Structures are given as C-alpha cells and as structure tokens.
Image (cartoon, rainbow, N blue to C red):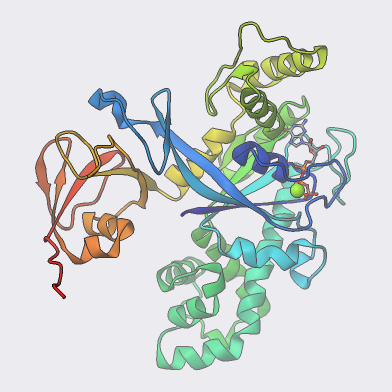
Length: 405
Ligand SMILES: Nc1nc2c(ncn2[C@@H]2O[C@H](COP(=O)(O)OP(=O)(O)OP(=O)(O)O)[C@@H](O)[C@H]2O)c(=O)[nH]1
Ligand SMILES: [Mg+2]
C-alpha cells in the first residue's frame, strides 16, 4: 500500500490532519511536542467511480464507493514534530525519521497563520514566519539524508569501485527507498556526476541531498490553519516560494470537526465535497452550531473546501502519478469470479503495464499471464500497454492444472 508521511514543525496541526484523514483519536494539543511516538492509520484518496460512466451498481471490496466517488486506501504516518538541528539528534523527531524513510511521498504541514514562534509555542497569529519554518524543516530533512551518505562514505567508495556511484549511493540509502535511477537523476541535476565522490565536501553532499529529496519523497506543502485570518497574507508567500502546484490551502481542524460530526450522525458530509448539511431533526448545541458557522464562513465560503481530501488526492494522483485501475474477471458484467461488480481498485504508477497489474494482484496471475483485455472496449491490450487512469482490465491466464495425489 502507498505510504504518505506527515512531517513538519511542532504544533502545525500534523496530528489533527492525521486524525481527520483516518478518524482515529491520536492526541492533539496546543503544547509543543504532543506527539511522542509515530501514529499510523489508513486514509483514502478518491475520484469519480467508473460505476457512473458504466451505469452499474457496484459492490466494492478493497475500496469504498460513496455517492459515485471511489475511495481507495493508503497508509498515512504522523511523526513527532521536527526541530532545528533534528539531524544531529536534537528533539524527538530525529528518532522517527527512519519511519518517514519508508514513505513514498510526504505531506509537509506548515502553520500558515503564523501562530507559532521559532520554538513551536503558540503565539499571536501573524507573528510567526511560515516560509522560514518550512525552509528549516526541509533543511533538517536534507541534512538527515546527507548525514546517511557521510556515514557511509567508505562503504560507497568500496561499492562504487565494483558497480557504479548511483548504485552505491542508492544502496546506502535503501532505508529511505532511493533507487539508482533517482540517484542518477539527482547527480545529473547537481552536476556532481563529473566530480569524483571521494572529493565531495560536506556542502556538495548537502547540495546533492537537496536535489535528491524531492525526487525520492515528492512533497506537498500543506498551508494549514487557513481558517485563521492572518493566513491569507502568508499563503501567497508560500505559493511564491514553492509554486502553486505544490502548496495546498487547508484547515485540518475544520475537516476533523466535519468528519466527526458526520460520524456522529449530525451532518451529511462526504470528504472532499464543498458542502455539508445539518441533518433534519438533529438538535445541535450552541457550541456545535457556532463551530459549524465558523467553518462555513471561514473555510467553505473562502476556500471552497477544507482542502484535506484534495491534498491527499494531489499527492497520490499528481505527485506520485498513480492511476486507479479496476481489474475484472468478466469483461461484460465487470465482475469478479463471485459476481461482485467493480470489486477492486489498484493504485498503479504511470508506466505500469497489464503484467504489473497482474503481479500486484497475485504472483500466480503474473506467472500464468496470457493476455489482457480492455473491458470498456473489448480490445486486446498489448503487453507493453501503459495503463491509464480508470482503465478496466481483464487478465486472461493459462488454466492451472491441479496435481493428482
Ligand atoms: N485554527 C486552527 N487550529 C488548528 C488547525 N489544525 C490544528 N490546529 C491546532 O493546532 C494545535 C496543534 O495541533 P496538533 O495536531 O497537535 O499539532 P502537531 O503538529 O501534531 O504537533 P506536535 O505533535 O507537537 O508536533 C492544536 O491546538 C490544534 O487544535 C486548523 O486547521 N485551524
Ligand atoms: Mg502531533
């Protein structure tokens, strides 16, 4: 399953976002360093389900379909807040960077309202420096990667002599899921390809890490706490620094309130949607009514939605370039062997082929693979076909013969 890691300075709202996305109850507070151990849970990414275009009623098994939207699970991990110099072992976060190493992509939560000071304590909104906060955290992550390379210098020199530099560096960075191609791309970008590794100084190693990090951990900046008015002046600064496509305006707290209220049966609200509706015959307390009015005016009316579901979707579909693929056994009824309509969705990265899909479902399916059929058109797909978002694929396999005793 794809894994998204949540990083950021303390008190930015990482656990609030985690709880909103998973509906778990990890501890949240306005004291710095509330989270002391990593939290892991299941979040969902969504897009319009193909049941609509095919005009069928589906029975999802590995995912969920709500009002014609298909929700597919991904793993999400929240870690303690990082502090400046975390890479040297300062603070709690450093111990858990290895957990982040296992993530496929990162969500970097920033307090866009500027209500935390340099040490992460809650202060007057507008007095913090969100862009600097984000740069500080990035620097920690870069130093963390650089530190691993520095620690493995001798190993890399030895390994590179019998293979290549990119393979040797990738091996030393296997804990952060770096592969030789990604290392090669970073070497090219840094123009360090022509400098012998043995001669790299610390600054060059850090520069290399700075280029490698966004390749191995595509990262979305979450401009959180957009419900606080001061965030309006900081959002443009964040988008100017990181680019519009890498910054998502969010209110994790609003999303958490809406999802919990929905779970309690008070509201009709589907994550990602632009509206919520208080259910008929539901009596809200004055506090609950006040909170919903606040969300309506400060979040929905201004930013269209809370931004959390869109942010998760952006990470998986845009940054990780994954597609939703629906495998079926019956290409006419769109069912599995048991008659379930559109039972499963697999998230597959761009460039995946039908055999990759087969392998993802079961190794035997890949072993006995004969051909694949596009269930929407009935056309046979070439072996090298690149699967596209919302493809429906039937995989035809060789019949397996059972051995007699
Ligand atoms: N106004 C507002 N407050 C928020 C939002 N998200 C989180 N908060 C508040 O920010 C404070 C910190 O939230 P946490 O989720 O505990 O932050 P964290 O980043 O996990 O903090 P550490 O675990 O200490 O690193 C809490 O008081 C939250 O209620 C938001 O969208 N809007
Ligand atoms: Mg936390």
